[in-house]
Length: 301
Image (cartoon, rainbow, N blue to C red):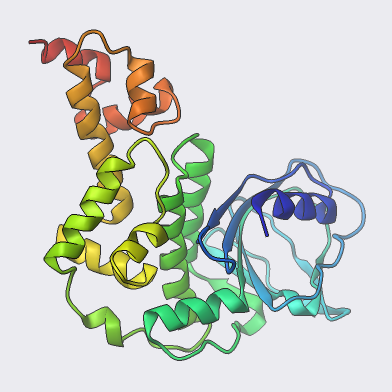
């Protein structure tokens, strides 16, 4: 399902504006979606039921209070009041419905059973036969941290790249299959880093695609590996994630272009894969300690 279809469906069901949504695993039909769900005002009635499907949704509040009235399979369920750092898990096959009588702000993680099966196969672990949490959830600071990272990327235009979304999806999968699927992650995870040719191939692909938005899946495919194994092996080989490496290479390329006084900052931003000059300045300053303009003046030849 494309991002705009998810946004339209959530907007219709919850009576809100289409929520910002990031999709991971774009090279696969089994995608994982992250949506920022917000309403600044209480509404009457309930959300519309979800279309029955083999999928799960994790709701991570970014403010409280949060939905306290929940119906699944047509029955009202007793659920505890959620605090910041808590999570609520619902099976979309049970057509969950919530009361909309309070404002809310949360990050919704969406994953299908097909995606769970596909990623389990890639990771070399047994199939995850559904997800479950007593009382529909509870304290989960890992999910809260992931939600904050995704929400921050959505607020900062350009930070939510395909590679960033893929990294979050891999971390999300690794956590939920252990915490909610009862599956231990092992096997391939214990293996070493990338072979020398794979590391060189990955670096070359990232370097020639700095102006674009390469995904982990695309680079992993060129190295003959699954997305999950590639991401883990790349970090073991380099000490950083593929997403962090991409950002580092974009900054290094920007430094080269900044040495040419004929290059405008806005043009450098686009050539290096930043959304605009503002995004370029923000990332560059965070990496180097001062703005591109000042860096250019300091390193003027």
